Length: 287
Image (tube, rainbow, N blue to C red; front, side, top):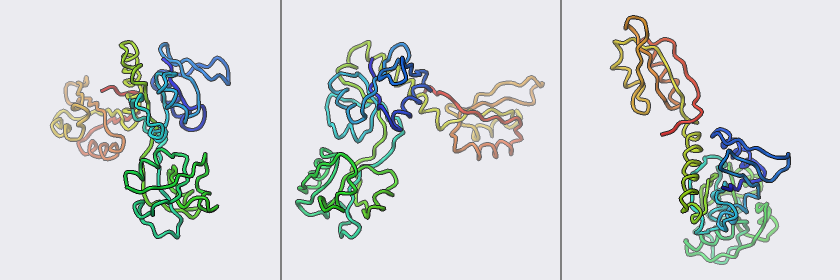
C-alpha cells in the first residue's frame, strides 16, 4: 500500500520519526529518492503536503499524512480520517487590521475582501455566518495583503499569532484547529486485505502515540501497605504485584502511569516506605 507523505518540512520529519518508532523505518534507494520502503507492506511516496488529499482521493495513494486544514480545504468525500497524529498543531484563523472595529467574524460587512490560500474553508465558514465575502486568492504570505490594500481581512494558519501581530493584524475568530492526520481512500480500505493493513498501521502508530505521555514505574513496596498502594498506582487496570524473594516482607509493584503524575506518585510511594523506584519511558503501548 502506498502512503503519501509530505516531501519536506516538519510534517515530513515528524511522520518519518513516528513510523520509525512504530517499527516502519523508511528505506531509501538513494539520497533524493521520492519513494521509500516502509516495512514489508507499505511504500512511502513523497509529494507536496497540499497535494496529498487529492492523491488519496483519486486513489494514487491508498493512505496519506497531511494537515487537517488541507483535508478540509480539499473537501473530498472519498477521504476518511483514520488517526489524529497529534503533531503539526496550528489554527486556521480570521484576522483583521489592528485598528479594525470588528471583534468577531460576524461583525465584518458584506463584500469584505478576504485574502487566503484556503478559499474553500473561508467561503464555507462565512456562508455559515450568512456573510457574503469576496475571496482574494493568494499562494502564501497572506499577512501582506491588508498592508498592500488588496484585502481587508485574511484567513490564514497560525501557531502562536506572533507573525500576525508583527504585521499589525489580530485574530477575531478561529475556523478550525489543525494537526497532522493519517487519512485513507474510503474505497481502497473497503477491500479486505487493504482494510487489514490499514487497521494494522493504525494500531502500530496509535501504540506509539499512546505511549508518549505514559511512563512505566516499578517499585519495591512493603507488603503490609498493599491496600494503600492501589490508590497510588491505579495503572491501566491496577498495579501488577510480584513477590520479592525476601521471605514475604516486600512486593514489587509495576504500573503504567501518566508522565505528568510521576512526581506526585513518587512522593506518595516514598510515604508508603517504597524503595528501589524506577521510572522508564515506553516505546509502544497497545490497549
